[in-house]
Image (cartoon, rainbow, N blue to C red; front, top):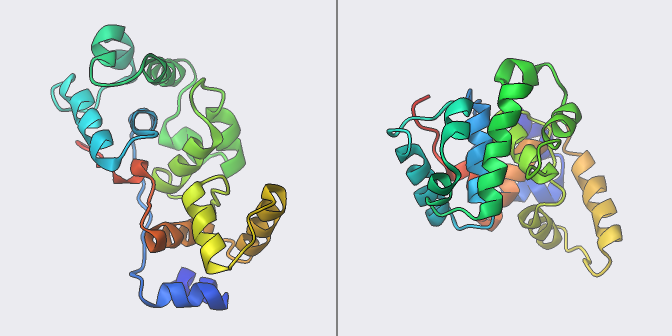
Length: 210
């Protein structure tokens, strides 16, 4: 597995990899639904997020809806699956953006990571972290480092015994360490989450009816 050899050059990371199974990256076709599921799952446990996502699919007969179907669904009905007003608005914002500007796989495939982040964070309710997760778990990009993810930060603080009293200093150090993992930083993140057992919820939502 090529990425393991590269990451193993980092002695501390090598230990973490020894007991770990190799990871593969998935490509998901339906970016709009993936993004909606990500918004729904934020700040929720995996279990609750899965329940809400299943209720969402149930509104459309168990199938992934089109962006137009999401827009056509009455606000109260969409909110009724267990989302806040804000999240319901954000889901509708994603659908609106898909219709107006498009976010299909082919379109995003032509952009580099930073361009995808700039493009999709125009949507109100979609932040940088959400798009980083999308790059990793839906677009299969190999070199994404989610520096603002607390799970990643905590895992690196523990693995490299870092001082986290000064947040600015800590970020610089995280970037310095992670730069050595390039061009396989996504795999490094996945192994760090696994090691700390706190993989982001968005990854665990199964994509139905591909």
